[in-house]
Length: 213
Image (cartoon, rainbow, N blue to C red; front, side):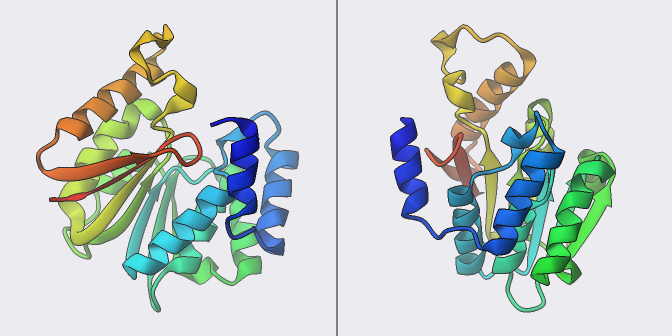
């Protein structure tokens, strides 16, 4: 979307509070050159609202970075709810851990520092996943999706980030890098997957919602 519409949407969504603003600032300062990997405040508000509406008891996040999306999900969990975060960077996630503690949600979050696919494959059939957020290496999206889908609760939703990929997702964009190709394949696969129903929203860089039929 044009930048002015993005700004308008953000201004008319729930604004980040002081702790969220501090996490945004810390990410910009300490993750210089990578801060664009963080979801925007409007998408964060969407994640909290969705988690709350679904009354999520068990959530899984694949790709935590500096923890903004995890903070947003944790705040929306049902009483006693848990969030499992999968990431490989202790450096980036340490920024999030500080702010999770400040927000009083650190006791709801289980951070696993390991390849996400290994963590997902180690999960038992129960408890079922009520919400999954995939926002990690794009070439791994298909594998993450296939591990999560059988573990998804009947009312559960998978949320996938970056599915518009700055417009490069279009076949005529000329982009030929592995990430773009992986996202094109993933989007086509999900759209044709008869096990699920899906919608691709124009929030942020594209957010796809997926649930069982």
